[in-house]
Image (cartoon, rainbow, N blue to C red; front, top):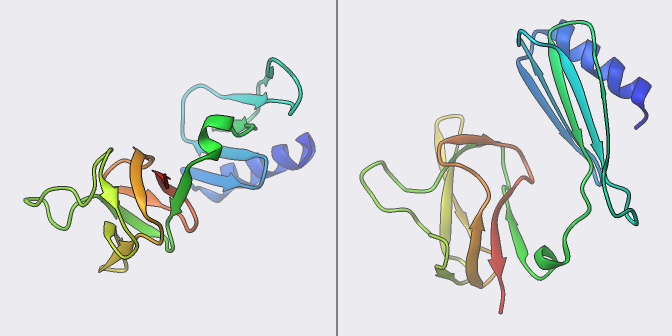
Length: 158
């Protein structure tokens, strides 16, 4: 995706009236937020073999802020398995407000254990683990919206 395509995407989102749009591809992540007083664009790209990221900022017209982040996966995270969201909805860590979380950082899980609930169209879908291991990190805040295939948890399979 070149800078012209990114600028056209920003203009399109600004005209559409959406407050925030997120686009993730293999090597690029774009977040466009509209409705802010200050208007700016931040582009951060990390070359696979470069030692430091290159940063360029350019002002845009319209009420939008775009953040473009290209990241190279760290070797530390390569040993972990990512539990991803199978659906779009709202992520909940507990079955109800008065109950404890399904899992915490450090919890041991096995295949079939419920790790969270995702609400979609007023239905609460229990998300079961497809891997066994220990929860290393929770990647999503409770009660926040999630997209299809969005990473939810990092699991250490060892």
